[in-house]
Length: 84
Image 1: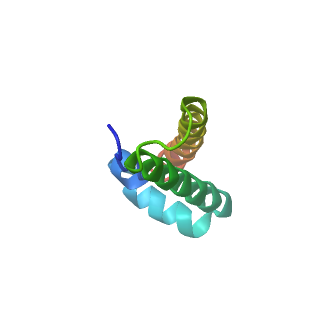
Image 2: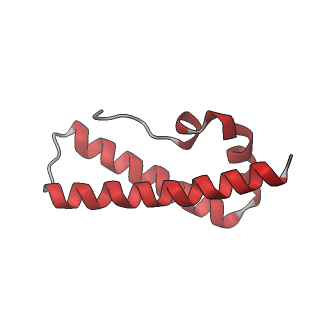
Image 3: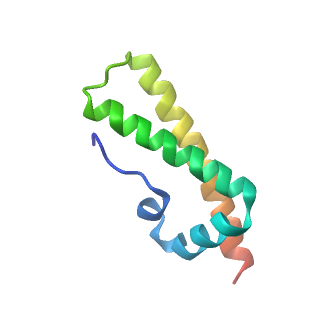
C-alpha cells in the first residue's frame, strides 16, 4: 500500500511497552528507531508525491527500511523474552 505508516508501534503492537522502554533506556535502539522512522517518513513522502525518484532508489530505501526493522525487531524480541 502506498503511504502506509510502518511505525514500530503499529507494526509490532505486542511490543509497545518494550518499544517505549528501549527508546528511553537503550541509546542504540533509540538511534536506530529514529533512523527507521525518518526513513519510513521519507518513503511515505516520496509515495505521496508520486515517487519523484527512480525505481532503484525507492527499492534501496525500502530495503534499508526492512533491514533496520529486522534489527529493531530482534532487539525488541530479545528484550521482551528477557523481561518475562
